[in-house]
Image 1: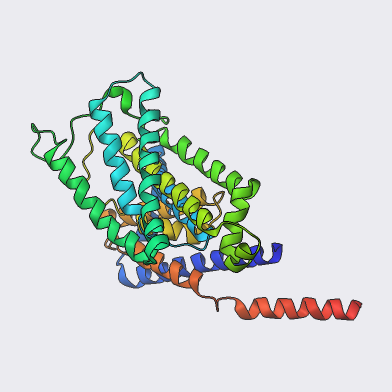
Image 2: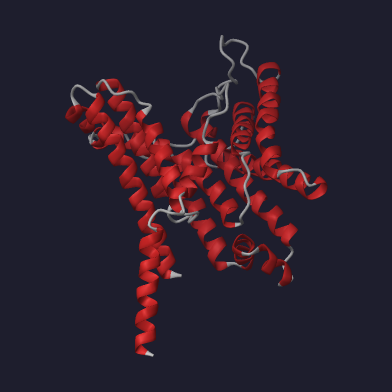
Length: 352
């Protein structure tokens, strides 16, 4: 087991290194000032407290979507509904934040809890449809993104829109509903603490509880889980409920931490990013924050490079695509691993 983890870790690091090397080579060939462009890309995001704050604030929603996919991947399930859940829960928290009154501290807690509950309920729908009628969870969840977006935009535009504004937004949030900023001079908010707490919770849940063991067993061998008497259907529902709750909490945290009104008019785009985060972290909740920070770092670097040099920001899309392809490639380092196993086996036979 330890050898397998070391191999996967080495393969992930090699995938990242190859992807970055490819990006650096393209920058060197396409830019008139490659050294300056590389400096903006590598050092720019770290050269001031405000830039570091930008990385952290961008990483917060990525952590939640990374956790969403981590628990699904651990259970060998796949669901593309994070986008719709993020949007729906964010809108619910935004509407409540503009229309309800509660004491400071309690107000955002209740709104985030409501967003998590909505996310859990909506996350169960694709699983329930799959269980009842055998429809593909992947297809149903993907279609639900558009359905939820349409419903939410109808509610926002016709029921909760600020009529005094020229844009489609809610009324301003109550001051007590917003998450506090925790790092002076940046926009990093208390959602960072909530994200870390969710990572700790999910890690302990997966590795220290009976339900977490059953989720991992379902992902490792569904047939063995069935023969062992585990309720496979209930485990699947549990995985979708927890992942949906995490996405719902993420949407609420992002809206209450970064905005004074709900102002999304399109899906935020964090859904598929979460799959990349989970791939990088190997579905380990303890590693998800670091994977999210890495993606946020290269995106901020690409943005600075695009603004201050002649290299487009789309470079980061190339890096991400290369990382996904290399990590998902089973052949990468396969020969080295086989030679290592053979040499170990020969050594054991010789000692015998």
